[in-house]
Length: 459
Image 1 (tube, rainbow, N blue to C red):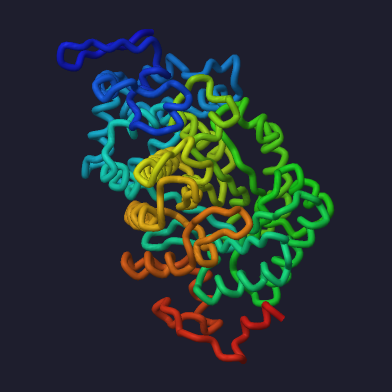
Image 2: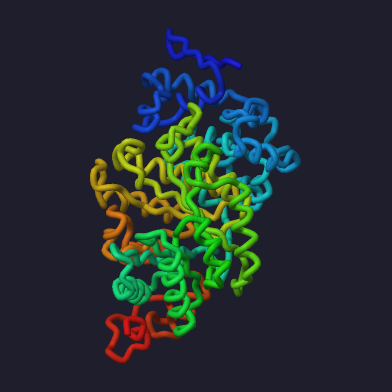
């Protein structure tokens, strides 16, 4: 079905829904690279106006990727709950935007709606929203998950302690773990990106992290962010696996590029659930996504990168993960050129994920060849904090010396907690006070003496 709208004396036509979505999106380098972006601001505005008038039901009638060709499309259609959709079924996309921003639309209202929405619906409405709209609407969404800590509660924000090392040297990893814990970070997960993908090395890192957790009775979870097949093998070997990690995308072809399928993720989810290692909950999957992943694999089917990203959240929510985050600026300037594009993408991803029922975090990051700097990341960090982000990254000095990109530091988490009054996960906050890292208000106590119990981590 074709769509059209006039701007001034110019009339613009869009042959199908995926073209309309692509042309309506904010300008970004990835869509230009893919050849799907609007050719002018006038065409972009015409697409936005046509999209605003589009009935929400249309997304159920015209899949952007045919389900016969794509298992993610089939998953999206199978997830749709007509009863949950009914309260907004009569709306256009523009009216849905207004409905989301209305004071009458509450957290409970959005929770009831979750399974009535498809990723394409959510991506579409985000294209009509200003940055402040994305913040306001996302703040209404509360997605709580739990394993050994409870993440996503009101007034709280967790941090993934990311102790990566360029050679997986245990001493270097342990030094970063100690550093992060002493700054009150690690309540989301202590998660290592390993240099190698060899199974003995992965199992060794898993055992090291679990030994630390048990020795100091730390209420958190650990994860080695290796390929899902390696984690399944580690489980079969009896390794202490808390969470299964995997990068995911929004098309079957892109996921095949990652070496995964829904059937493989089903197997991994069943394997980790059988361990029952959680104490306050059993959400045991961890996913990472990022705009541009489908394009970089030539697997986007002509769909714009933000809509592809929203489709990845349909995969994530299938498994009720503990953690899911967009690595927003990691892929590079070919997909998000500068700080402005990274900021916009981070707000879109957080909003779309939350609205689809995914407990969203963000790796607020950029590569050194992007037109971005730490001030841009400060802006995104602050806006996501206001928007109710579930968790962020904690990297020593904000500089990941193994992955060679810039993220957020332990100090950045302290800043955000201070200016917004955000606490840590309750189980972790109580442990920090018992370990004399923080006082009863969650504030750091200062320099640790030589007899501080946590110094034993580095021994």
